[in-house]
Amino acid sequence: MSVLKIYNSLAREKQTFAPIEPGKVRMYVCGMTVYDYCHLGHARVMVVFDMVQRWLRASGYAVNYVRNITDIDDKIIRRAVENKESLSQLTQRFIDAMHQDADALGVARPDHEPRATAYVPQMLGLIGQLEQKGLAYRSDDGDVNFAVREFPGYGKLSGKSLDDLRAGERVDVSGGKRDPLDFVLWKAAKPAEPDEAKWPSHWGPGRPGWHIECSAMATELLGEQFDIHGGGQDLQFPHHENEIAQSEGAHGHQFVNYWMHNGFVRVDNEKMSKSLGNFFTIREVLKSYDAEVVRFFILRAHYRSPLNYSDAHLDDAKGALARLYTALKQTPPDSRAFDDQEGNALRFAQAMDDDFNTAVAVSVLFDLANEINRTHDAALARQLRHLGGILGLLQREPQAFLQSAPGAGLADDEVARQIEARALAKKAKDFAAADRIRAELLAAGVILEDKPGGLTEWRRD
Image: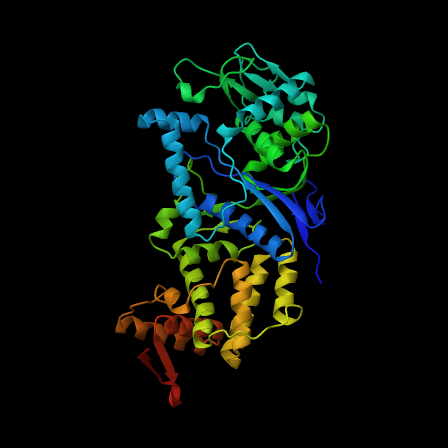
């Protein structure tokens, strides 16, 4: 049996996973700020940590999975004012849209999905603890800030020193702060802001800062110390660094044992982001691609690696997934048992236990598909469906997927071009490409028959 190892961003190495409470895992993942539709970067976070919780459960752990919703934020207030709607109307609309996108991608709902606005009392309590310990202070402008230089461990997650940060230009400089590195815990209310964005406190009316929200919600739902905290790579600094400072500063002990960060989604080698204007919303992509293809596209890469978005990469993912479904169509699964401790299933488990290496796990699925195509073994087909299901894949009737596979409804001249491309691939001894073209045509209902003399005949299924 393999042992689960997780790359811990805090330790900068893979470490054997040992939960605080044997057999149980407590996991928190930073969710969405709901003022707009989710983009593919959000999709990656949702799918990656859905995969993580699925594997933990498949490994026998009882998982308590929390993914929060940020429903109070400067961007939310600005958008609501622009739209002339209430904050609650705006956020509920985009929470509903987020759920629609997540459901389409096969992302299971977390066990808890706390909204920041429901945990303001806990945030105020945490800020009060920090103030009592000399780690928070009220500035002249009414904000309450965290005194970064009073927390000795600041920078340990990101590897940034205070001197390096001070020399940089990324820090927020405010006249009300004692130090430019200090960050806001409680924002004093401004007269023009809607009443919905204000809560009473002994520092005066205001609203929580972004970082304190996650510290308070995670502590309330998972305890002062828990197993796994996850999120996108862009959150490592400053958000997660500030969470550590707040939580460990208040409680006096370690906050999280394992920090996990998924890599960026990139377009033309730049991070996908709204600020760069190169982002694609999930619903935009789903107009052109089946949702399972998008999930497969995300999972065929290791979660820590960059994920390069393009139509060509999604088309390739679509054809690859069609090959797996084609194997299930040609050899329907039966009910016979298979041995999970040997062969393909063991290699699959070893890959997943190696820091959730879905890239290798997916290669095991293709090895299985090749075996099925060669042997037509229905028990292996059942194993393929079972292992795919652990990743949230291959659970539909094959024909339902294959109807949307690449080349569906191909015209005769396009079929001829594909056959010619396959012949050229075979001539170049690129048999993998030739097999892929054959599988894609089969998925589109086109059956090839190779004849003597190098001729290929075809018919529609």
